[in-house]
Image: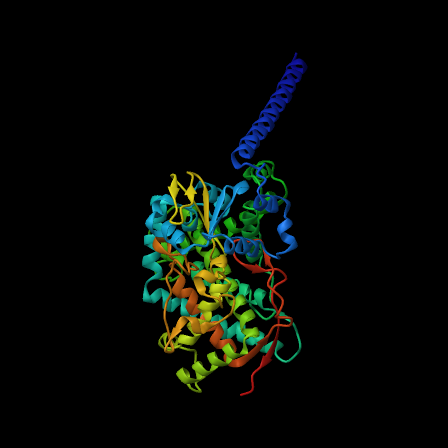
Length: 499
């Protein structure tokens, strides 16, 4: 009797598993069919066919350069990739419409939040509505304070003096090739970990140690970004359900990040946080939810690490091609600081208008975040008369905008800091023409801290070293990711300057 009952249970379990698997498969196929019908994957227009077949790669090294080409040839500066359900624009009027005039109609949207949800959770860069407003207000109060900026300045100064400069000195004059992109990523990760968690991972020590946290964070960012490249979200969702391939690796990487964050929060609760200056400690005074705290701080970790490293890498690549800009920066530093070897102060940096212009010009041509997408909540019409259907993804493209002659003039492809100066003083441009730090209600709260960090690095390095990039005339090739990252890094040679 017992054996018959066991046999019956086994049969029922097998039948249930078969029915469940069959239902899941049929539902997945049905969802895929609906997706195909909705996105018109049969579209035969030249642009969609080039995207689907990747034939654009015959003429362009980077997807962003192909989009730039299409946008330049569009009368309105706007294109539609039908198979992706994506409208892409490089029109400043459209950008202002999205980020200011009809801000409420263009949230991040559920599709975007789903892509990054496993990594960023309910963090500020992945939410809309009341949750975003709450975090925005809280972050604005924290990041806007003088004490916080001074704390960030001290962290950056210490990392430069104790690690970055000694590392560059150790390879100077030895014909030893160094990957500057890797160095800046390590530098930025040390800084943002100290600033966010009060933890020093020591990534930029002379031995250039491997950090499990940094590697996990890199993989989590990479695989999260790759989800957006799939022709259907169903592909990565099924892989996640079955725990396969890149989704399995993403899950493992996020587990490392989660365990680290959980340990830091637990430790801070036990040790106390009222007298500490890092972001985690500041936010813990307001938020008790551990998961929410983790999401908020990990979001700042992502924003503060990769964007600064990307911006510095592009800047030094451009500087290696334009020695006249490097000379002008050194002349300005000499004029403002004299022969002093001290670290530049906030006030001294404010007087360096050419340095500021040189950085902005670099960001114009190579924004760390090449594009940003929103999802229309309701039907709309953009200022250039483009109709936007409810649910459509609408992307503005700072990388392409920096290369548009109609925006920046016939010399738009030239690196020219002088375009930002009038009578030797920096003059800002319309933010919707230069949305590198976003604009409107979502303008980057960490903008000033990031710029000061970049200026500190540039001043420290150009005063003491000559950085040269072998084969600097080769066009950059970007790897897929949430921020602009050079494939193969940026190999450099370092020479100590003569006193």
